[in-house]
Image (cartoon, rainbow, N blue to C red; front, side, top):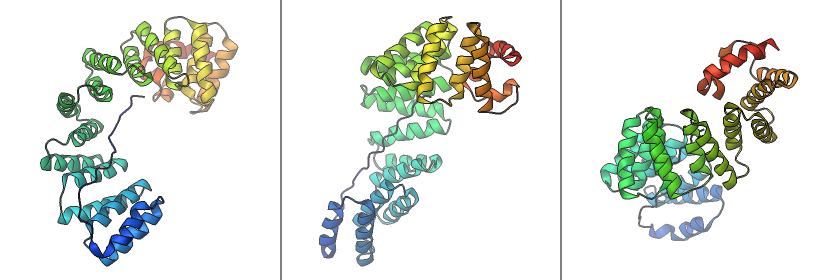
Length: 316
């Protein structure tokens, strides 16, 4: 549930427009339809095969249409003749979009070789390293980004996530708290709340999820996790309310159905416990083994609580 933010801003380098194609170029830049843009820039390329302006803007249009491979091809043609930090950065973003994280990492690194002060590229490089499980490398890059931009909450959140991956919970909490201090909103409170929950600080987690909900009353994940903290704190009626609210948004959420089953069981409402547990299992398989639930929050984060009560749910 942790969120990863990437700068996908398109950087526009400075080119010199070809004289014989100015009219088509102006028309293409004014066009609002990406397909039309691509057609016009393609005409320009046919007239001037080395018009890198056209390749660049066509790449942007392709990227906007989700044709990331096409965008990468156009950016690559520019790089062959005029390697530029901005072009590497934009190509890295397109590679990131197709989950080619190794390729994105290489492009962001090349952009930084050409422009060591390219903060957006450094930040995106850190995010890519995180996805490649290079958490230490991500932290080192984010440290440098924070030195330049110390008041951006999402940067602290990203570094906190990297610390979490290294199981450095206290340091991660400091970063999440800094993010809350800089920008108290649904996202910053939610992220800190999930971390408190991970280390069994249920009351503090509950408080953060409540704050997240006040900022965003339709924050489904916060309702689920707050319901979880209520359940683990023994406040079953409140847990029930939050889980039922979560199901209003997604009636087939087996995580929440499991939460409901556990809550009803703790309330001695065995009929509803059995009903919701059955629904959860039907969404997965008919197997009663605990390994059936290996991908759920309950298995990953509350294994012993879940295992203890699963035996009883299976008997209903």
